[in-house]
Length: 111
Length: 114
Image 1 (cartoon, each protein chain N blue to C red):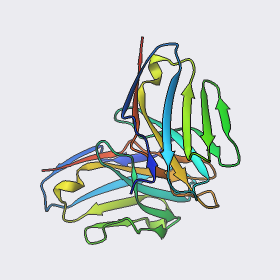
Image 2 (cartoon, helix red, strand yellow):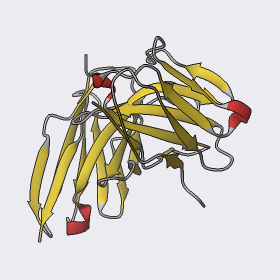
Image 3 (cartoon, helix red, strand yellow):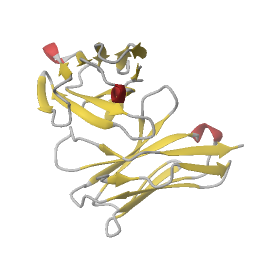
Image 4 (cartoon, one colour):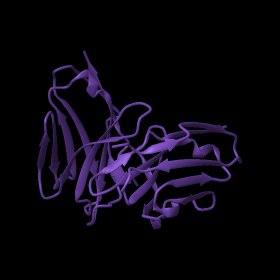
């Protein structure tokens, strides 16, 4: 069974630029999560999708972050414009009937 | 306010000995608890879980203990192996249904010395 795929693995941008991350969940998993993990902290939930609908985006800074999951499969997370404090690892996770499975993450550095 | 706390950022243990990782929580509504393991440049992987109706769950070398009155859980690894060296995250969730949101602690870096 293929795992959760994420790209790119690393991204370096300057502040005020925009960036997008892509996630392909495990086939058949209806629930998809995006997390932000700042160095030295645990993952913090940004948004949860069930199929192509948003379940919870209360922790998503909507003035600069957006996410979509068209067709209920792949998902993209966008930051526009980026700030220095957005430097973190962005993790995507998917879930079927069992526990959450995480992708390898995208390490974002904002300079 | 951190609802899930791992107060030890790091732990070193000799190979073959027991590793004990601790986690405290404040939200009394949490009823399901998990441990994830994370290697560098990889995403967290699920290790073991426990429901609040139990006080112990065992899977091979890994055992999780839950003390609801103290709002405390611990992960025991016996015997510890060098391959166990990783960051361990405690996580908790509440409510019903399979797609529960997880609240994570800040992690404990375990180093198992050969």
